[in-house]
Image (tube, rainbow over all chains, first blue to last red; front, side, top):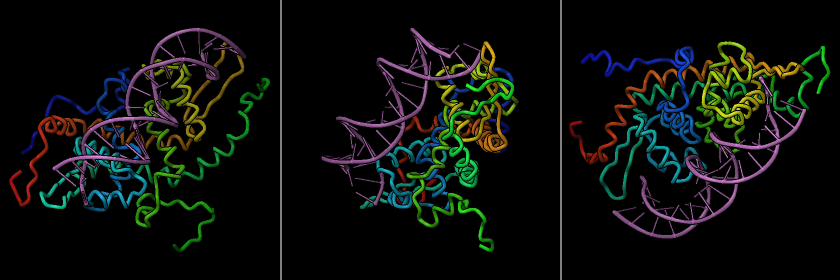
Length: 146
Length: 146
DNA sequence: CTGTATCCCCTCCGATACTG
DNA sequence: CAGTATCGGAGGGGATACAG
């Protein structure tokens, strides 16, 4: 099965859209996906699931500090976006397994690269935070500071 | 670890932290940075600035739909994190130029890779959205055709 | 032109209680 | 075990007015 493209929807990078002057933030469904992927718990869920299948309470324990409500909501969003696969066995007590889909694995890789870069760059960011404690720079050497 | 690492701050990837069972979301300053970088307007500001220096109202027009308040707040966050450089010329009317720092350029690259991947993958996500209109799968206790 | 200040709605998110 | 339902505080974010 080699479908070339589902629709005539050609993938257009953000930079391209900007060049054409399109609006991006509003009426843009990809904004929702980005929100889910980079949400407070979404990032952590993805990275944990990258290590393999987890059950609900395993995720809850591993992540730590996430409420049942938010974990359930986050998982539903990611499942709905096709990032996470949910398999519920009809047994008592309930047994549900969460894992990444191929799509989710691609997404997680991108998210993790960003997250790891931030972790690695935190010393440089912290340096700026310290410097920002002082008042704003005079900016222009030839004119008076404010 | 063969090297003792000169700085006291050792960069630890998220995956490493997870392996050690550390908490990540709470009391984690990098969470704030991620929030700023992936915020509603942060992503767009970064990608626009990647093309070069822009003035305040240039950014506002290019992005489109952002309020003065939120653009100013977004720029301040990114400036405070060391991602954006702000140069204010002391003239009337005011003239302020925003551009990416080297740190911001690195961040923007990671963010853009993620954003572009999402744009490119939207057809696959949309397919899941359509499928999610139906009720949840009955879930198979055993193997079943899918 | 480049912002700040104020008001106010709306969403996020934790806490708690309840269900299958 | 794996959720759902409801409440309520905190903060995001738009509209507007105003200042430097």
